[in-house]
Length: 166
Ligand SMILES: [Zn+2]
Image (cartoon, rainbow, N blue to C red; front, top):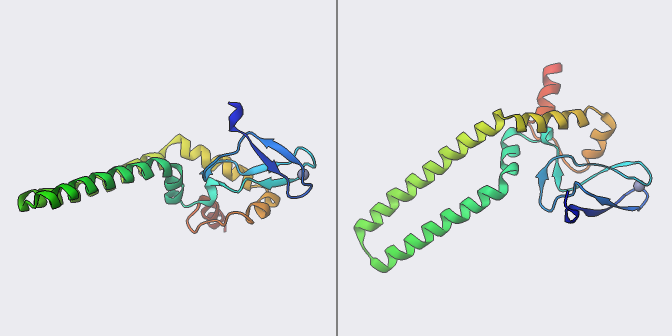
């Protein structure tokens, strides 16, 4: 791991500061559990979410939030450039073409995202994220701690499993 990938984390119990090599800059999915090397108590990394507490849809959205953010910007720029062009040209035919392309582009985007989402939710990566998360959440003490930071979503694997058991 590169040395720049750490953050200093302060323990809420004893105040000790330590290096956290699993820190993340933006909100993401992974292991929020943090064990203080000084007092040994468990706390959490605020911007890391437990995958098993997220609805599958939210998990996908969070996992690829950066990529889809960029893609959306790209689409908006594309629309803006063509709209500008149409306004300058004032050509009805081009306007209609553009409207059709705009709708098609949006439908392709939705379809591609749906396929991508399905692929991700069927992937080993997603299964591992949820399995690792479920393992951490099998510790009731840890669940109590993590609930201070993240609430389980309605259709999340954690609640689904509990439903199946009862
Ligand atoms: Zn501590």
